[in-house]
Length: 345
Ligand code: FES
Image (cartoon, rainbow, N blue to C red; front, side, top):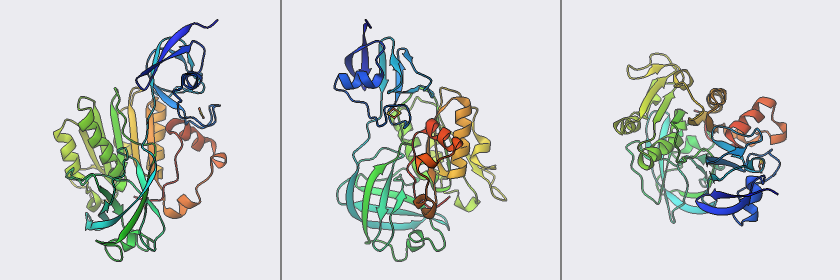
């Protein structure tokens, strides 16, 4: 008969038996781990193993395993992410401020705060406009209030929403917000954190990097951020804030005539060598994000991705069963991704 072992789930010790899956042990003890398929397909039950030895059943990515497949062998400590509930809120636009010729900073003041984790996103609806997904962040000087949602949004010519920002949508406009959503949020960890962003993908990246500096100042942090056009490198003050607090920062510019403080090329050309102990969070255009996912997967690093799609593409995004092998592989590496409708970077 299998022997008793102790299992600690998010700080709570429960009785378990060697040979049980982590999911079975959690359910039997009343400490359910979020799950869905229970057959190793959906990635919903991925948990981090802090200590102990489990039979990972081939599901290990970095220090994570699938709880529905991995089996207990010895005393083990695991953790999963508890995310805030999705809620609906209303508010008004406080301001629309140009950051660059293409990018605006929109501040929304909510009547009641909306809890989210740094790096998550929310669905925003302005009157008469289709909903759009934006990632709450801080201003580039690090400021922001509890009841405020601050977005950095690229304005697109003819964009159903973004082209109206600062025009039909301005201070005093009503806003409806739903969320939070998304898996590419800040998690406390032991290994190095590498944050990679392009364009307005810097919005969630900045939220994640700043949270890491404030919550785990001893952790190694590398931030690689860039834009195609030099005039859209709006992230300099935020990078300076991070640098002042010990982070390594790299600014890139893939267009012609990069400024002196930026390296020429895309963020993917300037990543540090990755190791299996690294955690990578990447946000921005879907192709750049996919490239980062591949590089992270090749190194065995844990990667959480927040790819931005055009609104039209998000609406026609493929269902899981329609994904090709490479796309399914990326989902296994980075977890399931909700099609997110944000202007491309
Ligand atoms: S519950 Fe779906 S992979 Fe474990």
